[in-house]
Length: 168
Image (cartoon, rainbow, N blue to C red; front, top):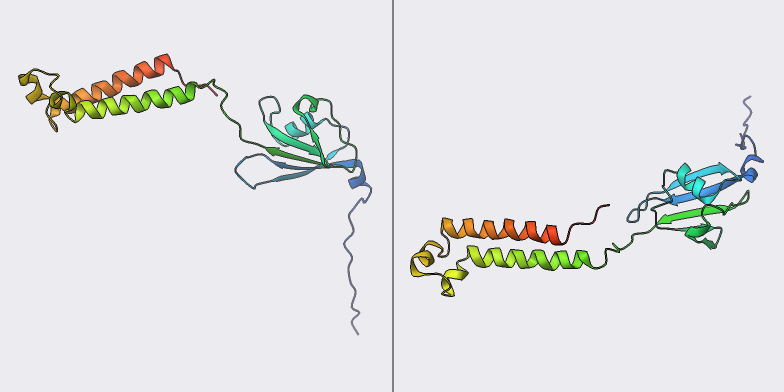
């Protein structure tokens, strides 16, 4: 007769988890993807971030040890104890470019409007051009499209020179 034996699954070293810190990290601000790790106790928050592939220097994140928020200034010094939980959540941040991005957007909108006005024959219709040129720059002609492209290129170059894009 066969015996029915149940097998119990026991961790190889129950004491091991008492000597480690549990990390749950969400490295992307708009994703629910997580990294779950166990690391030996004694490492700082910054070292744990590096362990999961995050660079703490330029990073904006919320970090907690159990339920206590750890400020960025403390990341290099805060050391969780064995058995504690560390949660890390990268957060999206604003540019901090001093308003240059908003000015760039407004400048580029102006360039688009000027190019459309030129290519659509706006100069000819407003009477700004002599009659011979007005016929050449009438709506829908090749000359009007070339003029609109020129205004677009010239305006974009100058907007990018005066208000350069922020380097990341």
